[in-house]
Amino acid sequence: MTSAQMDKNQSNSQRAATAIRELIFSGDLLPGSDHLESELAERLGMSRTPIREAVVMLEGQGLLSVRPRKGVRILPVSPDDMRDIYDVLTALESLAAENAAKAGYKDEDLADLTDAIKRMDSAIAEEDRHAWALADDDFHRELVRLGGNSRVDEIVQRMSNQVRRARWVTLFVRPLPIKSNEDHRAVCEAIRSGDADLARSRHQQHRQHARDVLVQLLSGLGFNRV
Amino acid sequence: MTSAQMDKNQSNSQRAATAIRELIFSGDLLPGSDHLESELAERLGMSRTPIREAVVMLEGQGLLSVRPRKGVRILPVSPDDMRDIYDVLTALESLAAENAAKAGYKDEDLADLTDAIKRMDSAIAEEDRHAWALADDDFHRELVRLGGNSRVDEIVQRMSNQVRRARWVTLFVRPLPIKSNEDHRAVCEAIRSGDADLARSRHQQHRQHARDVLVQLLSGLGFNRV
DNA sequence: GCATTATTTTGCGTATGCATTAAATGAGGC
DNA sequence: GCCTCATTTAATGCATACGCAAAATAATGC
Image: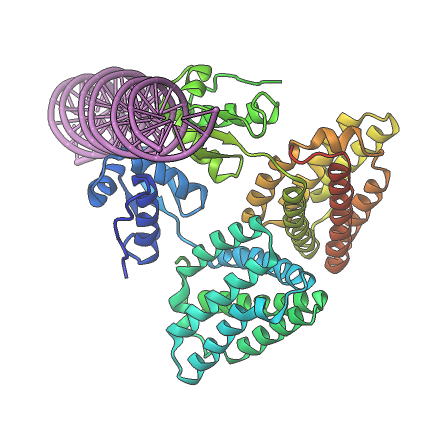
């Protein structure tokens, strides 16, 4: 899982950034925990300098905060945070859906999107939640890409990363997301037919529902942070 | 204008970040220009280390990009970029307006908002475009604050910074924004009366109009970058 | 025994030097 | 005259070192 391959031509700072990100997502660095720069440096086998740069980057992405003399703190994500993040995702992905519908894509342009839907279908048929999650990610990423707004792309990516930590809750506690696929298909169809309003509203509804389910779940199960 | 006051207890990295930001906004560092780290270090009277950290931060905010051996490039903002940015602002500020309306604020909570509107009114009466711009900024910032979503707040701030560079175009070339104030008042009223849908749709319309005017202006005047 | 001060420890911010490597320059062949 | 390859130049990425300030610990007075 930890794909720590030595990509030759990228800086140690970048390697450090992705490595620390991985450590956070994998749960190796728990939310709320503190870590000294020197500790991370030793752990990743480099000096403090690239670690610091990585930490500055990750702080900008909202994954951690540097607290002088207390180490960097891995930021927890509360249910309220999750609601905020989902609201941003809802707004921006809906915008992407709308713009994608306006762009007049042909069927071949939507190949990746329909493929992702297909994979979600078969994943549901086999009750393979992990495969479903991967395909779902692909769907959303491709949708945003089709939206053609690079800043939306970037922000959505950032927010998705923060949600990813609660993935195992969304995956294994909630019921199999069957209705979800109807939504995906509807959004895709609206894009194909160029109905921007429908694409937007349908995706918005889809995301809002997902948000409600997740927040309810997290609060109900007593998670105050993830 | 260059408020380079020596705030005693903040790091040089942070000072460097704000200083470089100022240099960009003030036009001292022109869009598209390249600057060596050592040059910036000397200019700000510190070593390269804090400069590098500042540069990493600003790169994360989309203001510049580090291009190894070519120096940091101040990123230009094309009309297309401007459209993308305005679309993000539209989506997120509309969300904020909606949430603000749902929050059930009392009149006193909306004091800052109405105050900003008042200042815009008098600024228009006196044809003081600079004062209007300041009040307009305040209005939008306060609106987003009332939305109560910290991530929306952060992202909007970031995007607004990028727009700010084209401010002089929006300010002095376009006609006096009289209609703009009607919009602001309507949004404020919708929030007061708790009409979330109206608040959202009205603000969306307001922003989309602003976007169209600006993009048209920039393209028409032959600005390919700002 | 507790509070308060003195001392030590320790983590961070920054400066500096060096090795790496991309760009620039020059030499030589065509 | 122009293209190719070797050489030089120089900016960066990184490691290291050091001083300072905050936290932790010990010591002293009450």
